[in-house]
Picture 1: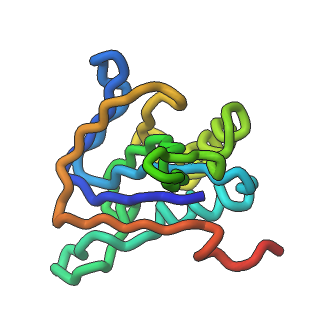
Picture 2: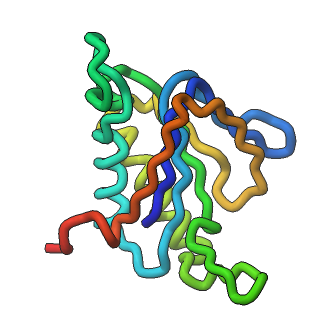
Length: 155
């Protein structure tokens, strides 16, 4: 599972010109599901997203607090194109997991974050929909990581 995390002053996602998810200060997270991902990857990603320290402490110490520590929002948006690679000039998406199983794992990331934080602080787009994502990147701070490269080996 691959995520691109952006520290934001605000972010929202629209489907058919209607806002379906929005946050003020916090994280906008694009989530791509790899065809070999499992529940383990989804739970690991959710835990990391709640713990990653991209914010200052109240004392001004940088990279010291998480969105959860500050009570900030997290906007999670599914994005299969994170697993694209170019075959000539055309993107190929065969590494991305398809349909129902990808949705189940994306939903698991979201439900794990809600369970381990505050449900009302987690917002999402609409899985599989064409979305318009507006963000105001704070910093800018943009971090990418992949569960298959970063997590400990499955037990």
